[in-house]
Length: 338
Image 1 (tube, rainbow, N blue to C red):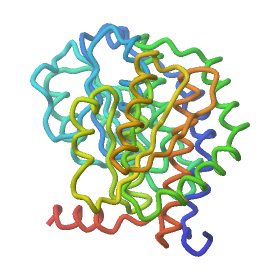
Image 2: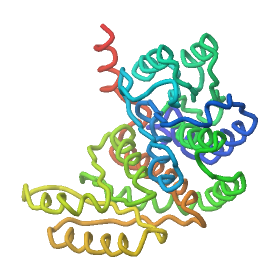
Image 3: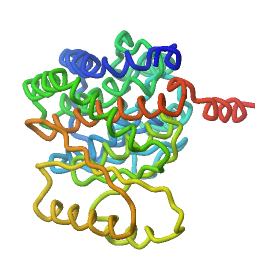
């Protein structure tokens, strides 16, 4: 592990609870203009790990949001965004070109903008155009890899939406969830090691429902970037209407499924998960299960964010990969810039 991890990705992964606690506390003194609290729609633009907060917010808090929330990653704004919308410019590095381009259009439309960043051009833009930005110190990410700042981006997004009144997440709930996370970290790491060994050599498909769908999306991304493994994710109940028929061919497939389960799923979803597992077994595909501990849905989400970080890190080690490197993403960006 030491030879394969010169940039200390393990250290960043272990500091996930510190990232969560730090960014949440930082947001407590954050001030917003009054008009930011009455938007008719919320749009979050980010790429890669900077979009993780949007995935979590949509699945965890769908039953709290009183206005539409769209997450996307592109150079241009959707047509509906205007001066009565809220645009969250999410970029860990502060230099990601797609959200910066969208932000320029948002400025021209008079849209209310909030930045979430570690600095860079987003910070410069916020000063130039006088919009608020939650700017965090990157001290709890020793690897200096933006995608390893999951706590900053996820809790930062939830904090902004909470301070603006769009979500109802209390300081006590976050404090308890982070404390649970710290208390359970060794258990999470051991389970991640166990399941990483079972994923090796297979194409993982991550299944989840309701408040954990965002987690499934994030683990898919982490399997790609950190483990250098092809992967996919699907949500229940949608997958029950198509994916099960796609398990038959090709006959030599090397698939394995990972179910993110929860005691907070509805009775109907619990039944669907059990039946989905039955169909998967009958199609000759193995499935694994990860059930997080946690006193609340937020606790479960944070537990799985930690688990996913360790799972994909250990799988990278099993494949003999340096988890910090993303050579093909870097190559693509270099060629695109020419």
